[in-house]
Length: 565
Ligand SMILES: Cc1ncc(C[n+]2csc(CCOP(=O)(O)OP(=O)(O)O)c2C)c(N)n1
Image (cartoon, rainbow, N blue to C red; front, top):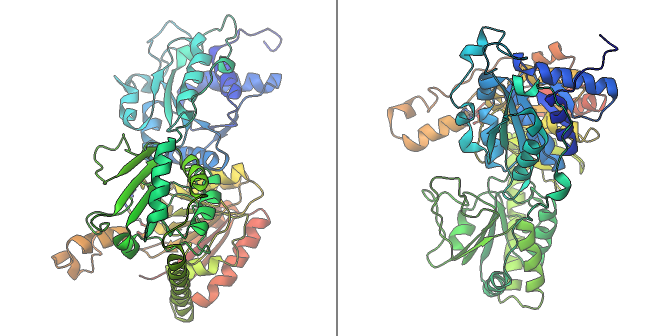
């Protein structure tokens, strides 16, 4: 058998097509639908052909968040393959995150064999009947840019070309392909090739000169301009230009629910993370890549303030409802607008520049003093707080650290300096993303410390055993810090916000929010990791140092920081 030449199968063309698109990894959670893929990988290994590296990830959400994490750091789309309808269903939480975060990725899954017999790959297991759906892609169509089922083996290359060009065009996003087993197993008479070389991709949108002139005029004349960002920093170059522009023009920046490093908290124009009073007193609000620049039910810009909305998709066309006002709407990448503005502003003088700079620099100093005092006071107390936790991270975070935040990291207390150093959970807020994303980030940058700061709830949503398993087996030593308030804090806040004088408030809003926490640190013993539990503020700095040292020596580590609410 070994010496007989074997007929090439479509799954081999398919893997070659992924490699032609420079896809490094195929994150897999397999089932009976994978047989041709397994065979194709085995054949590629035998002949030393370059194909993506296959990796078993023992939960679908973890597979998707790993792909997300790898792509957010490298910009390179990756592929995921899951098991038919059931595996696909498990992944949709993370797919929603990737979709709202415009992460290009190729999600694929097997499709149960459609033939009941007679073909290579026909149904051969009980589940093959019950796993068939009328429309497998229907359950996720709303959150992908494109979906398709491969019909014939000789389509392998052209289908992958189509999938990737759509995933990578502006605005980027995930795409979905289902792969029937018979099709992957078809004999490929002649190998098909990718048509990549003849498919120029459209470039991302850039602003018109007249819109930039208008905006530059408004900035020069403004008394109290304000920039609110959300997605700025996905391209790390955004943050470089924004820092210059904010400094030169004394433009305060609020990275509100930021998903990336937009500006350092040490920059004098970083003015906190909540729009608040600056929004209410602004006469020009420049919203850059933010789906929700403020909460209209809580705060509003002043009447008469000019509002500008900028983004690759400034209307957020896939959001059913969104009604933020706009006097000027620019469809363009953040980088192209920031660069064009910098140029356009060069010949202009700002009407209120000096006064504004003095005021904002003083405000920044005052904010920093307050944040420091809040943290240090907690450090002298007898219970850890989120501010103290973040403050203590300063000891281990350096310019090369990658920080992943599932709501619990705050630059106010631990300023970062490097573009591309911060990644936070998607605007969709599908929890369980951070741990897997940190593994993907580590895979992409093995020499950097990857630190994720997660709520106890967020940690448990990540299927932690699956994630610790991957960290162990794939040798991806990451540092996980749990902000453990034994609570779904956000759930409690929402209850008290809406029913502060209702019956639920009598129980402090804790009904359905209490989350008595087990000893998460002990989970590390099962995964050859370093685990610590910290109850007292004074013990936290040393615990972080020990954990960072363990990671440096190649061990994954977890610090369970008990922060009683
Ligand atoms: C997949 C998913 N399920 C449920 C929710 C609803 N939810 C939003 S915040 C939250 C609590 C998260 O708890 P934790 O991570 O401990 O952070 P805390 O709110 O306590 O700071 C929950 C359950 C969600 N966002 N995503």
